[in-house]
Length: 449
Image (cartoon, rainbow, N blue to C red):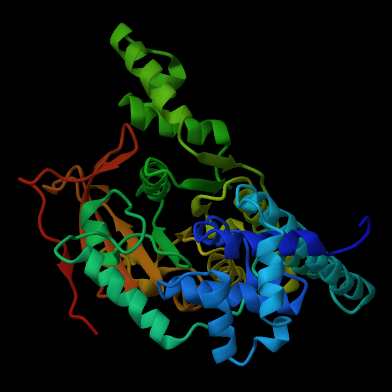
């Protein structure tokens, strides 16, 4: 069987187990797809077995024969005698999992052979830029490894049922649709970080946008989701100091100076143990291009299947060599933000991009930023599902009563109303937190669209 891209014996053994034992199908359903079978008759038998199982019926030969006959497909699979032949070669369903893996292994190899032809054609086409060829090749290989060779269309009826189930599960519970950020007021407005979203956080310097992103990263990681952070403005070690500082409740400066009390050391040891267990991955490589980010995120997704969030700090530094291919900085930023949105949708993870604001904020009496304050705002606003603006009144007004309060203004929210979330901020520990009930107000919502 060497060199063959199919394993007929494994296919027959898998189907035999499913016909022999009603408990076999649910064991392999998540790893075995219909197209995995090389023989069309086997695809029909497997698809019919799934339909019967979902209807609460058995998958024994008699029930299968009746169903296939009703569908006028019995002769296509070789008649009733073939069903009984599959059962007769089966003495136990113990190894059904192994048989299914063998079937899918051959399927993946068939798909790799198909993809290799496409990649070869791309490589031979010298009119396509090399970087684009690499990116498309990576995407094709990733699709094979993730088994994304299924029908891309879903009936509306299935989608509606899923919506109803989500509503039913959340009834009476203020549970975010996406992954909670850990900041309650913010989650009430944006309903968590949702799959496929591109989220922008803009702020003037010294407001704490990097600290806010790290806060979200830490909270997401504590829920068991992997987090990848591209930190183009600081080294991994510096970001690590911030994370440990927040966890240990010790100022970053005192950590770097090693100016610690015995109690500090005890807290530091506990914090390091705690932080070390978090599935957070850092990249401080400079001069990153959009293609670099896409390749790195896809690799991380392979390494961390439960990847739940990507953070890019910050967007305007993601130009490097690649930005020279477009006429203006605005076009470059537009290309990058659009590429990151497509990546979020492709991998079904939220991506947060931090962004600079123009100095126009400083010229206004009210320093709270708005969408037009984003540099190259048109492209970013168009591509992002959520646009958030971070503001701390203490930066401009030393007499403010909101000394330790930050406002996260949601100025665009594709899935809901805009609004303002108030959170606490400790600048010495670069730490955001929920305000206590006594100081916390309900988030301010703008009128719904």
